[in-house]
Amino acid sequence: MAKPKVMMALRDAVSIESLVRLACQLSHGMQADLIALHVVEVPLVTPLDAPEEAIDRSGRELLAQAKRAAEKLSVSISTELMRARDAGEAIVGVAKDRGVELLVIGHHKPHAHTLGEALLGGIARYVAHHAPCRVIVQIPAPDQP
Image 1 (cartoon, rainbow, N blue to C red):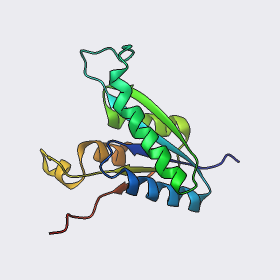
Image 2: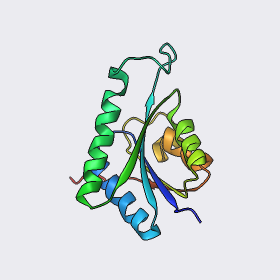
Image 3: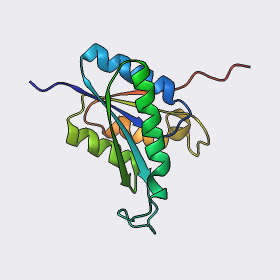
Image 4: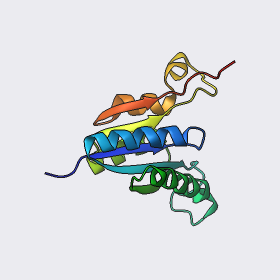
């Protein structure tokens, strides 16, 4: 039987340490391989295969930061950077293709436009409803006064 897989979808560096810590703990408890994914959302006017290295730079840096955070916890992770028009669809697609058993995604509440986005966020909500596996959404604690 294949080893289970846990995937964490990384969006930005705001809560990367806590998201990596959570995903490492969960993957350890499941004796699972851990995958870190970052999706670069590419606008329609830019081809997905554009050779522009600047498109991927921040994503590569984010994945390197996640790898370093996991190494501090003595956990080895594989990383994947992909380009897509819609991050939610891409995350769900990778989870299906890889046979992921648990998906860990972060959410912070910057500028919600609808009630649904205020409660969970567009990408996190899409992933939670369409993923082929269990999903844990990490919501940061409120700022302390």
